[in-house]
Image (cartoon, rainbow, N blue to C red; front, side, top):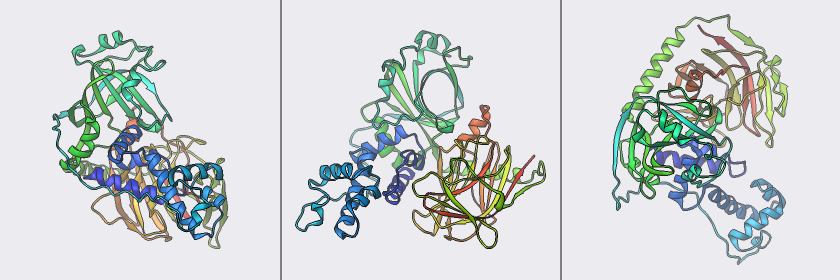
Length: 482
């Protein structure tokens, strides 16, 4: 059922951002999978792409603004993220069959797309062949196709095996020679890796060191549901089998894997899963790690930053001032990225960040950068209401790639009130306290994998908030632990 809950939260995210640019990676983070995987499942369930659904919802809401008659068509076009009135008019006519100006008249037929509501619907007419397997962590040697910001809805992953320039330089004979068992064929791994990278790997399971032109990749230990690859098998597993089972998809640092007997011909699909018992065990492990981390002494004296001395990041376009009590007040313009007021030095893990702050907007953020001028790994914790409070606590991985939604506890947080936030980061745990209470603790994060692979996640700390919002910072303290 977690998948259905996540899909309904995706709808909520879209509804709250119809007048803001939609980051299509966010819905994938909400349900805990890659953009590729999410776009496939969404299209399968809804019958249209997510971008088409967003377009229809915006144009449906735009009708109400037009009929109210209080705003110019130009302003309405910009409000719903169209570059120009002309592009808005074309899209409007394509959906509604008339122009925006004509929609102000009476007796005009228009169309309306209501917000989606995902519910459980078990079809089960066509049987599925599957098995559940526990598999320890294993390594592969792989030819890597680095996709980076490549976002294509309904992309045919199997076609990447044959696409010119992608795999023509993949030496399959070398891969087979390196395989632990050549009879296992090839693995197609769509890996949403840390730091925002999107990779597709053509791989073989192998304990050998990758030769030049290839890479080693570590697949984390997991429980997998292995499904015979048939038409829509992946989509049906997510929308039929998973909601009816006791499992949910494991975090998105776990890839989906296809096993190929021939180049580009999938025989099996492996989907990483975990049960409620698995989730509880991970939570208990996280709480134990947190207790051990909190028992550590400071490596050096805690560093207190005077809010008056916090400096804007060079890329942040914000209005900065201080209130009568000397608190930092930062307004982030709606059209720019997130405002960031950075500390003047780098820090290393394990780390405790304590901040007393409030925001009148939709989130309160603390970025942990990867260097003095780089926040590309940045991460944030969001106290997100969608609109103004009460807030609901949501946690983002410092890799900016995995949003974790807390379940079963009251995560309400008052809006526009000062909060004492403590963010604890270690090599095996991340935890957040609000007003002295542990609100979230977890061990299953992509940044932990990054650390194990030699990445350095250290740098200035940036209090921030979202677009069109004001954040007020009363205090900021950073403590390195040992």
